[in-house]
Length: 292
Image 1 (cartoon, rainbow, N blue to C red):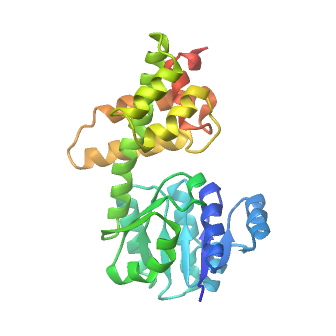
Image 2 (cartoon, rainbow, N blue to C red):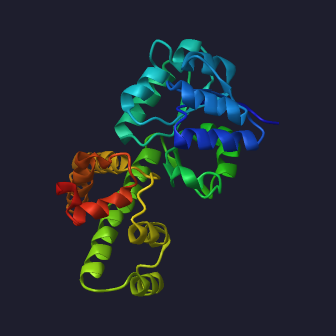
């Protein structure tokens, strides 16, 4: 039997997850500040509601996936947030990419209202949700994780319990450190190969068969060669996430070298007005087009 679930944040990822939750037989309520996103949910068969408080009143488990920390706090502990429902025993699954300290602090605030929290960030872009090849990294109490596991596991290729609240966020930061930096490195690789006279066919064959071979190259290689910058993982999100990685490293006495250098290229892309474009557009920074 399906659960009554609530999704706060109906952006590309939130709406895609909501759709798949409904496919799995759950009743889905949703809230977003954008009425157009609410209408899209309704068109998919979900039920839009006026605020997160009402969402919590109607649901067994709530989820949030939002871009900014202030938006998360507004919808959880704010005047119209889930805590205002007064629903002790509610489980909230916070799926946004945030610093571990933020997630730990939020869990403490929610606990004061009798709400248990999991931090469950996602690896994989929204276009992978329908194929169920995303992964979840979930921090929280064992018994709370086990309660949410039957909902999360069918949505993903892997769902890993990483430990206490905050460890999911830490694992996501570490994962993104690789993904973000390698995207910049691959852009360098392609531009250098092109300027040194290599054809795309030669690079595709050699890179796809050699030590570069892997999921990242399979996804990003065609985007670079085709100059395909249609948004999947946005430049602005890469820049934000790399900033989180740099700050987390400093908290633990580590001075990162590669990530700050790569981040500067994404910041240049963002400054050029390409923040909403796919992160592959960082290639044009290496070509100097952001300065034109």
